[in-house]
Length: 104
Image (cartoon, rainbow, N blue to C red; front, side, top):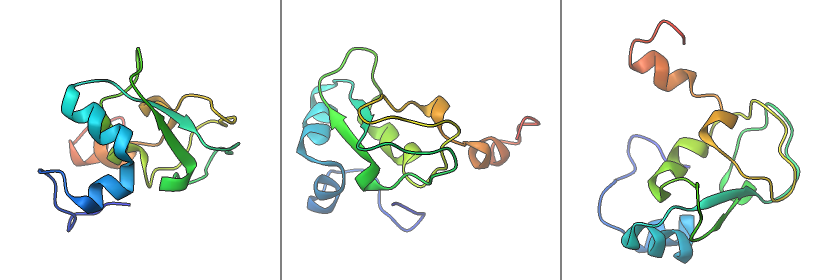
């Protein structure tokens, strides 16, 4: 999981270890990545690195940099093994509140 003290920017060995080589190669080549549930997950479960696997390249997937918006967020709906994980599946209220949205 990342936090405010985690550097962003250049790809480092630590970032490769965290997201996997396929995701890093996809980021460098501009491909989208399909993030899939690594196992059955229930609503409210907070996503960790072991809960998501990346399949690349993917049509309709997410840019690799969106992984940080998934990890550490609670699920809003159940996900089954190998079901795709999208930003709509996780609670993003903190981001909305930080932007000053009334929806948060």
